Image (cartoon, rainbow, N blue to C red; front, side, top):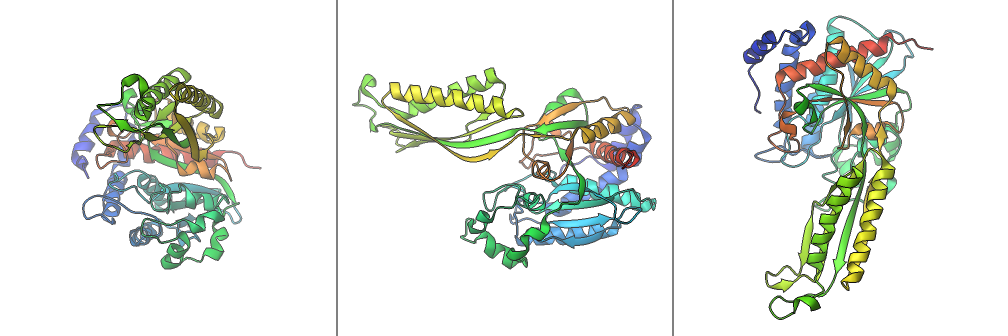
Length: 433
């Protein structure tokens, strides 16, 4: 991984007079976290690059390594019923509520080293700092490394955080990976009992808090290392299809064509216009023409739509406008248009109390206040179904993520650790009934 040296970053920190001492003091722990990110990066199914999917050998090895670090930090460690690795740092009093910290340990193919993983390691580092001082809070802290967030192996995202939230779906058991292995079979091979999946459900949580790289360029553009997340955009994914008539590119006159390719191009351009005017995010990630010959008029076109917004109503209105446009366009050209939805997730709004705790942590560090939404999905979306959920973003270089060039700086990781400690202190000082 491409990281600055400890000495170089210390010089940068000393040069910046606004950097609080507790951030500078956190640099050694930040370096340890980056080193641990590198260790986890070696647990990959790829000879070159990172890929670690749910219920794989790499997942098992990542859990084992993370378990060692949790134990070193003073946690009681266990693997739950869906393969999440968990550690509890006990409260100062018995029968206390529990705050959960963490993120995911799985990755996409050819991933970066920090997406999800850094959030787990920050939770461990925060607990380790408490343990070093022999300090206990009025609540338990559970640090969790979720086994599945990306949806790479079985095509469904957030499965293990949804298990914790009590929203596991039994229909998933028949899902199969690219090798034909069902989710049920993978469970059993991993050493898990499908009959006990409900044991992972948590109904004892004070809240869930996740630190994550931004995966976007906003913080870097503002020159800020951290930001309080306001919520996560609601997402809808659909498959669109346009059917026309294939024909010879040289003999079919232009006015007589039923060209599905041209209609698809016009529809994609209109989707961009609608997204810009309605203030939503819309993406066509896949587009294919049929039959695909260089000298054949496309008789069919298939493409995907990913449309998201922090406002579900605005998102749905934009999608309805696109559907109306595409229906009219295809009717005018003698084509047939169809749209099939295969994923929908509502927008998630972060808990105000946790956002205030984030803002207070940044203020205590003399960090300018900054709130921003997340366009990407996270485990916090699932956990918000069962408890208050909040997030803190840290800057990533050029906003690059889901790519080997994903990068963070040592100083920003130190900032993140200092802020997480402050969040815990803020929540610990709140009056309890």
